[in-house]
Length: 101
Image (cartoon, rainbow, N blue to C red; front, side):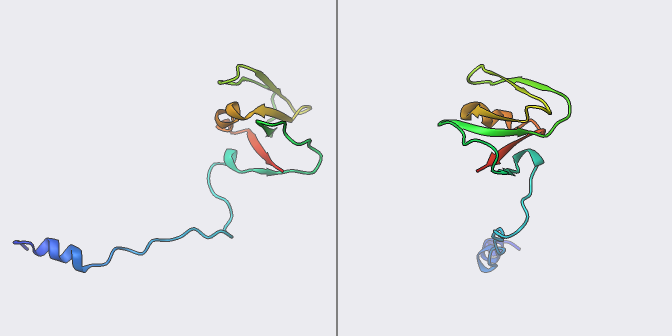
């Protein structure tokens, strides 16, 4: 092909169909970004905060990268209100999940 035939072939072939996500499909992605439904026993988060639930076995102590606060999680203290600015980064930890109200 030469002299514009390749260009004409591109124009004459339709683009591939775009698949739209199924809203009823099971959530995908790493487990740390899957929300945990609230069991109704957690208090609502204060303004600007997010409730995180710890699913690990060993105690976890982590410093919020924005606020500088230290958050201590353990099997006895699994749910904490975390500054929303810190939560964005803390949700990268595989054993922390966001609680959905």
